[in-house]
Amino acid sequence: MTLKVVVKLGGSILQNEKGEIDLDLIRRYAEIIKQARKEGIMVVAVVVGGGTISRRFISYARSLNASEGLCDVVGIQATRLNGYLFIAAMGDDAYPVIPQTLDEVAQAHATGKIVIVGGLQPGQSTSAVAALVAERLKADLLLNATDVDGVFTSDPKRDPNAKIIPELSVRSFRDVILSKSHVAGGYELFDMVALKVVERAKIKLVILNGKQPENILHVFKGKKVGTHITPT
Image (cartoon, rainbow, N blue to C red):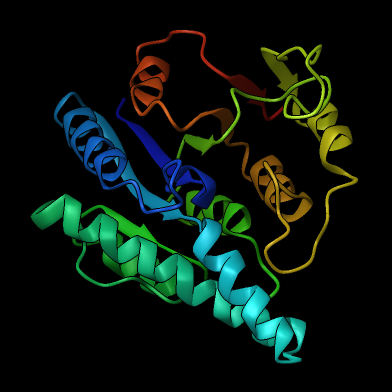
């Protein structure tokens, strides 16, 4: 049975230390995803976050008294710009247009190309988009590549004693994310909408460090990387 995978790349991992887009990282992801498909792992879609660019433009919009809805639209456009960089790196392996709805995602998937997706609609994180895409395409696995090694007992950026949790149930993971902010540009790690979709679709979720693209290959080969969240 061929494993169908959706990869979600957090926008925070796409910038280097200078705050510039990390083109080398994008190239490495493109090559690894192509390699995985050659080895029978069907990466069917890559959902790309907005990161620093998105937050910057959302901040500009707020300074101009934009509504939260308009700020979301601004953030969505930033995710799509990042997505087009991935399309460029993937070449002919990628569907050449960023879908704007789930129906368009399904239509693009039907071509056999890897579908690159950004945000879809205001009020929705790209984590939620990734979960919805995984559900629509009947994926077995959702890989969430972020800027930490997985789910920790506390915030590892603030607490040096934080310890990684190798495996969690969906119910236990829910407790971890209940307190997260839900304003434009404020999403971290995962959110409740995304979690509910993963739970109802019974999709396995792995949260791992996206600064090391090889981690997704390690998961495919059965190595214990990041935090594995089981749907039951």
